[in-house]
Structures are given as C-alpha cells and as structure tokens.
Image (cartoon, rainbow over all chains, first blue to last red; front, side):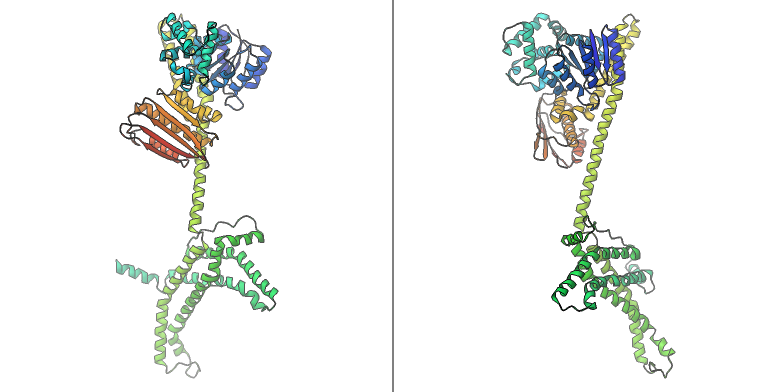
Length: 216
Length: 422
C-alpha cells in the first residue's frame, strides 16, 4: 500500500516513514507543507495521504484545507489527518462533503502502532477513522432530534460506528458479543428511521445522521 | 513644640535667611515677565496713537495675535523661573495641536488652556507684578530707613539734606525701617506663594485634563501589557507544539514500535519498554491539555464557538453550549473569554458536583457576555484554591466585569462582561 506523508516536523516525518516502511507500506513521497502535498499526490497517486493539520506557512489549519482539496481532486486517494488536538470543527469540515476514505486522529495515536496502522488501512480502504475525542465532541453537539431517542449504550455503539469500527471491533471495544452489537445496531437503524437497504449503506447513513444531527 | 515651630518660622523669615532672599529674587524676577503681557498689548498704542478705524482694528488684531503666540513661551518662562529659583516643578502643558502656522495658533483660541494662560498674563500676573514691585520697594525702604541715622551722622551739618535737629523724626524713620526689615520677608513669602499658586493653577496643566490624559495613557499601556502577555502565551504554545510535543510523539511512536516488534525480548526488558511507552503517552496527554489551556490554535483559526465546543466536550459533565458572536472580538478578549469558560468548567468538575452546565457566550453591541451556570452545590467563594481570583483578575485586565452568585445549595452562576472595543 502506498502512502504519501505531509508533516512539517522533520523528526516525526522520519519516524512515520520508518514506521510505515517497517510495517510493509511504501512511502513514495514525504513533504513538509501543503503545496508540496498536492504535487506529490498528483505525481504518485498513492492509496492514502497522512496529513498534519498544522503546517507552514500559517501553522493553523492548512492540513484541513489541503485535505479538502485533495478529496475533491483525487477522490480515490484517502486522507488521514493527524493533529495535536482534535477539533470537532475541523472534523465537521472534513466530513461535511466526504464520509468515506477520511480519517481524523490525534497525533498521539501513532504511538499505538498497530491501532494506528489499522486505522490507516481502514481509511485507505474507503472507511473512516475518527478519534474517540472527536466523536465525543460530535456527540455532545449533536444531542438533538432523533439521536436523543437512543440509549446510552446505543450511542456508544453509534460512536464506535462513526469511528469506523466493524461489528467485531465494536463488540471487542464494549466487551459484549457480536450478536448484541448487531441488536443495538438494528435498534439504532429503526430509531433513526433508516430505510431498509444494504447493511453497509445503512451504517453510513446512521453515521451521517449522527454527524449531522440537525437534519431529521 | 509650638514655641520651636514658631522659632523656626521666625528664623526662616529673618531678613538674612536664604529662604527670604530666594523668595525675594523669585518675586523680583517675575516682574518683567508679568508686565510683558500688557507691554505687548499696549506697545502699538505707545508708539503711535491710532485715530483711523482700520488702524484701530489693526492695532487690536496685532497685539491679540502676539498675545496668542507669546502666551505659551511666557508660561514656559514662568515655569522655568519656579524651577530655577525655588526648585518647584510645575509640569508642562500638553503641547498645542499639530502645526506651527498662524492658523494652528488661532485654532488654539478654542482651547481652555490658552485662556487660562491669558488670564495669568493679563490679570493675575500683573497684580502679582505690582505686589512684587511693592516687595522690592519695601526692601529698599527698609534699607534706606534703617540706615537713616548713618546719613544723619555722615552728612555735613551745612548740607541742605542735613537732618540735624530732627532726632525724633530720625527715631521714627529708623523704627519704621526696622519694622519693614522684619515685615518684608513675610511679604516676599506671601507674594512668592501667591505666584507659585497662580503659576501652578493657571500655567500648569489642568488637573482634570491631566488626570484624563494619564488615565488614557495608563489604559493604553495596560492594553499593551495584556496583549504582550497574550502574544507570549501564543509563542510558548507554538514553541511547545513545534518542539517538545513533536519529539514526544516521535519518542512514543518509537517505543510503540519497539513494543510491537520486539516481542521476543525477555519479559523484564519488554515490561520496561511497555511502561516507558505508557508513560510517554500519559505525558503526551498531559502536555496536550496544558498546551490547549495556554492558547488553543483553533481559537485563532475558528473563533470562540469552535474552541469552546472542544472544551465543553472534554468535560465529563454534560454542557449545553450556545455561542452567538456575529463579529469576532480581539484575540485578547477571545482568549479571556475562552479562559473564563474553561476555568469555570474545571471548577464545576472539581468542586460543584453538578449534573449539567449551561454556557452562553453572546455578543451584544460592543460587549461580550459570558455566562456559566451549573446546578451543583454552590457555595463557591474566592478563597479555597478555586482559581476564581485569578479569573476575576484576568477579566479585570481587559476592563471586564466579573460577578459570581453561588448560594449554599446552588446554583452557581458566573457572569462576565468583556468590552470588545478597547
């Protein structure tokens, strides 16, 4: 799997390259700012890009804006944003138009190597990976309308779905059986009035509903 | 004590005391300046008495213009005199508005200061000048009369000025001279005080104006200090973010990699690596929270709403947040508002045992209203390490108001108003 990295800290960039290469990824390019990222992606067409949120020249949200451009121009390239802080507002920007092939994690999460690599693979495969902190922020803000009908357990399940976990992953995280998870998910679907359709599609809809709690 | 103070008073007013002569010199040195105003106004008339209307008008206009132009230099000369002779410092007037031309001088006619100056130069000053002349005359009289017996003795008896045979008159004149010699120091002292008082009140800066200027000056300086502190916080945040934080992430990542790839290490060695890894992650979390409290980058990028939703989400108590800030405030005011909410929420978590918190941030006109209400047990006070004092101080640094109501049993409400137009 081929990954392009945009990270302005030289140390961390080198660390990420080492991490990815020892784990069997290929890193055709690693750049230090947003402009270079777009050029590198255009040239190498990787499976995914790992992008730092805060990069030169402004050191604010260049990474988020670059990620939006990237998703627009190269929809087949997944984007995993890394940030020292996760801000719901950045996640909302990112998820407003794209709900697949995007991820947004705290930079600290790279320390948990295997979990980080799982998230990266998930995103590259067209899934999502949201940091639990982002999810809790989103939950707080979107505590309106149909979502209020959910039980706390169902909210937990939905939050984990939003993080991009599979049923098995959710079952593991909550220490319950997979069938219990499936039951919760079915309850969520019905409480959110989601149409019967292919399971994956409904999952995405549920997450969307969750992320965009204002619409009914 | 009374007698000693009376004694000192007499001594300082003795005809030979330094103070007396300083005051006399001071009083006398004012005379030319005090009559300069009238001299300027009257000068044309002395040279040529005008009869023609046009000339009369000209003769009115020229001295007036001269008075306007000379008022400030004359005042400066009086202040100099006070400082040079008596060591009394009268602060200078604020400078006249910009420009040096006649127009700006005429524009000065509208300033109340100029009229205070003219009042001194044309009214009070000349009166003091007269008193000063009287003082000088008294000194002359004192010296002439106390020494009258010497003339009487020195003059030949046949001189037309001879006072021989006027012993009684000589006696009376001598007594009068002594009286003048003793009395004139008090007169000099009185006139000097009068003059200093008049110079201070009429030629010095007006107290109200001066205070207002000083308040403006201080407000400006304080705003500068507050902004500098805010800037410094942002710089520290940036330095920590670019340096320590990145290196720690890198370290934690390497430890994580070691932990996963070196599974065949002896259990003890692996345990050390695992512990180091966990420790590094905890430090990262602490550092992240610390840096965020310092000055979150998102506050600068996206404003209060975005930054506060982040804060609210990190609090383990449900928070209802409403932010209505149509126009962003200055970054310093935003930072204070952010700090207020995040500190207040920290307090709620630590002390209030609340089940829900309401946070409202509204901008109405040029005031940012911040309200934090919790349904906890109340009884919050400024003591007890609640950080409320620090909050109030930080609010005060931008001229905001801070109110807290927290009856025993709750609820606790913190209300902060921050002026946005500094």
